[in-house]
Image 1 (tube, helix red, strand yellow):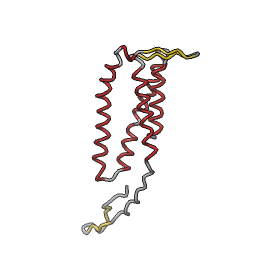
Image 2 (spheres, rainbow, N blue to C red):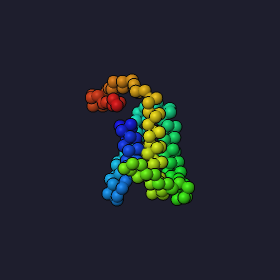
Image 3 (cartoon, rainbow, N blue to C red):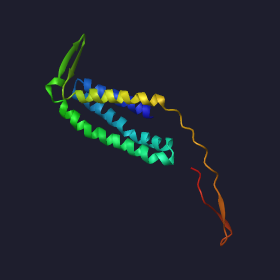
Image 4 (cartoon, rainbow, N blue to C red):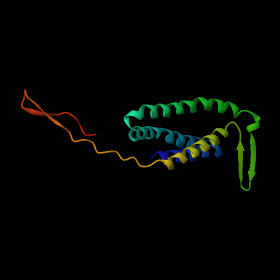
Length: 151
């Protein structure tokens, strides 16, 4: 699911950068937002793939890098207004414009594409089976009560 979300985000941001009209921009931003909404499944996998001892550190780093991205995004957006980052390229049958409106899409698609690379170094996570539930006798009623639920 995480790989699909990253590919969708990279493609949607590239589409946003190359969009020719307003309807394409709206559709591309919708797909990018959908991909970003899949971050919950990535956070869920992080909590599943880590041990209890390392979970707090991994979740903190994940959230911290997300916040860092939001902070740096404002700075990158300010940089894209500089004329040095503006260009027009004409290819046969295709025209690419790089300016303050399209550069954030190009940058985001590059970062999403680069974030796919570390996924190839992860292995599947094998977790031991949960322990069976234990029963304890309830002396007052003569019945049994379940103490732990299998997860």
